[in-house]
Image 1 (cartoon, helix red, strand yellow):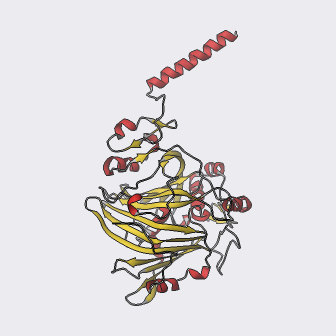
Image 2 (tube, rainbow, N blue to C red):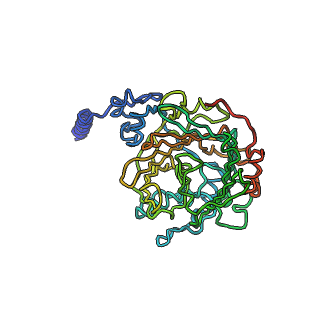
Length: 439
């Protein structure tokens, strides 16, 4: 009896093996370090890595970037992403009190940390509610931008023609201050308005025609649109911009304000955010530490199409896929946002026209950043590469910080519209003027 059972099991296994061969399943994965590129895509797409086919882990938009724009994908074994202790502790403490109201689509009870850490609850919710919950996690958790962050050395934006190369480089500095949801010590909320989530400033110091131009942005967590102010040096005045500025382009680039970090908006600004499901993609989330670097170590601005990120390791990541319906007046018809299922970070976004044509790919690539003294626990994550490829316009943008400095001592009063005036008159927002070589 036992022998017969054993024989049946062996026959079943043998049959399964033959079926796998017949279906083209490969017995061995690609090796770590394998490069996937335009020249070998057709041969590589059916191969597997960590048990999944390459084609199934590369969305159509990124496949297009590989085939037509020379994007190279270097494989790395997957590794869990981690939260710093202070974010995990805040999540454990406050998440049980968070409630989502499907009628108003608003969240109540959130104080700090990730509002909806339970992935099973997200997946069990109706698709439009699950999509809102995923995007609230991105908007509120602060997973990649610390309580205080300076982007300096300087902050640079590149505008790129894929045939001619870099057209323009804009240099400056940026400062971000989390007003509520703070987790690194002290009160969770500062200032007079409990619904201000973050304030930020960006000031450009080059080239000459925009030197002194600055933007101050106050971002809320209760559905109010951002307050955005601009300092115009030519008239030496701070001007408030319209309430629709959140869907305008950022500093002359092809990137909209709500494209920042691939998604920077309040979920209720969009009529519907539908969770389409989960899938696996290849994406860089353990890039080499940014430190202080030259631009030519992170973006290939010397070779066509001059915008591809380099020195990146791509690994399998499970993501939520959220289809965002945009309101009337928004340039895009819809957006598809890919959010990491472990750490609530929007890895990249596809933007489409009203007729359904792919318009832009807005990407964010991550890397671990060691915690500060006294924070303890595993590394947090920081944005290492951010940019956009405008497929319709055939144009690229890349944004970079020569150095990030996160969770350093800073006051709410240090990040105000007045800082735009100070910066325009030569006072840097960042901590050091050093920056590496660039175009």
